[in-house]
Image (cartoon, rainbow, N blue to C red):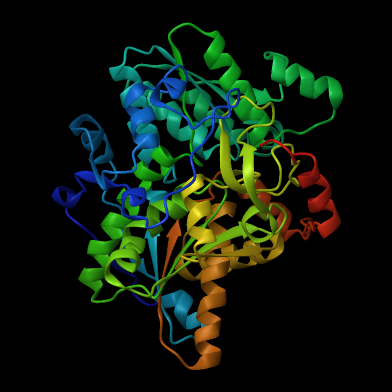
Length: 454
């Protein structure tokens, strides 16, 4: 193998502020609406559920830069800044003239980028005097991150884990429990939303939409408790911009600037984290970087969904969100990229896609694992099944460069490692995984169920 080239920033180069792209957007995202009144959300609508600071960040459309609390920065320093790596061996295997870089978020203590926002959310909840928090998790990366963050800030945590992932990924469950969280398979009998789902469909294996409903219900019915989440909403994307802000400085160290920036896409947290800091130069400075969100073909909200107001959860507890959606009652296939099995996209990403400031591609499950295995064999890191979607998209772009004879610089976010996802790789290597397809009729039928929400 070629010698891997890493670009490392010193600890004192860790960003002191998060970047809020909404402040620089020419067309602001449409407002989220109160589910009862159908009026634009106000701070007071969100504070029963979220810490006040997080509610303010969620609705902030004016401040491009928001200070990172020193208590959060100190804990981020445990693993940040993360490395930027030139993937020479992957380039060689593809025989491409493209220069491929990846931001390695897998080096965090929990193995993914999710800790960037978990620390911030736990801090703001603790600052407000909260003692208990709830959340949902798909693949378990967010639940794992929040479990550690909750322990660091002395909070009690209950995690509703999508049932299929609870069964597919026992070691993620074990990690959460090791860090002190209570983990409940969703749908469960512990909430009204869960009981309703089980009654209507006893064999249902769960979705992020259902798990969100359960986590919100528990938060709203428990004294001194707040809800937290790992993707979709604006304040989560805000916290993740440390990824791209570091990558900007590291690309300067490498003497390059990305022509293409790629992230896998479930609700938008890691994509926004790597993309938004670079996207501001397209908006403000006329740069022409392409931004590609790579989602699973079995859950194609960006590539085949519809833009409209929809709930972020299955039971309809959340605000109505202007989003590209497959419908909040969409039941995703049981792919192993559990973190990408979500029916909708956040308000910011949805508006950026509408305005053609970014692109989306869908990746088949077998193609994602093929890319993940190649990456492991060339760069030595087994990627999470979610991250493998970004790798597949990066490989496709690099092969286009080979066909066209062009040299482009490609940056993708390696959002996490797959060392606790080896059961999925076992199935792939044994030939037991399949692709899942959705017909246009299936999508149309599901979307028809949410007509008339607004």
